[in-house]
Image (cartoon, rainbow, N blue to C red):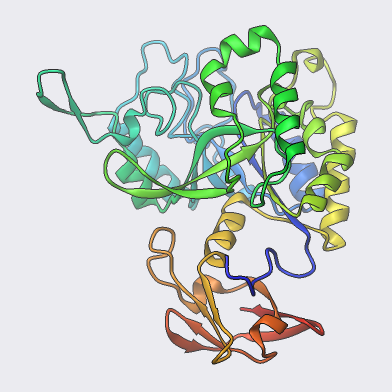
Length: 390
């Protein structure tokens, strides 16, 4: 990141999003979540959905196909694969299902930018066989076969540029350097996991180690030769339900995130209850409601930025490719070649980036977008801080 660029738009100290998986969600519980989070609190989170669901253990699970009204009720910038084909009995998955699901999304006006693998789905990109990202299969003799589970090309055509890498980290705050306390916390959380959980989730637990760079996102080259961005999620496997959410976003954790000046893509299943809360009248427990109200307070006070996962990742990608030149007083927004093959005023519309004016050596910089001079509002925030507003 260019040294003149502030990490987040002034005066925000940190950035939090929610990457919800729709597993186990019933329509009445979905309505309660929508009514409280998106309508009453007005939090600008994005959401995730199943396009279709064939899960015979969860026959009433919400999907876009069964409940088309969910698609336009609030923003869905994430899809949880092409649908739930787990426990589908005789109903398997084929590439044709991906083609049909993509058409369903387009017709519904749902334009996701983020893909999250689901359980041990055979069409996953990074979990299990990873066959969703492999365009050709080769046996031990060298014979080549068509892979009827491959769909990464359809994912790209749909506009998705971010794929969850399968890691869940207990580190509070990505997009920052790690310290000793972070490693100590992660080790402690791993030891607290039950033996059953460790055995069930062994591959996932191994992937949940602390990445040395603690990047929120990074480029990843898939087996079919394409490069997209992978991103990490914050949380723990055992807290991934509406009850455990309290352990991830309570006021103490949020305060620590802001102190650390990091980002957090919270891992949860908002529609899933802990078995102990299965008979509860309301789906959202009061502790979690209080936590969400606290998020709204921090967002309104402009201490904590809240957005959809795709909006945060888009911001980070653009921010990390900004170039400043103090000698000629320019700020250039440069396309990254993965998320943005080229940048335009339309793509930057509504975004804000803040800068250290002392390092720029000017309070009225010239704005360039991919080398072309452009117009943007220059807002004076503090004597030494300016923001470029599109």
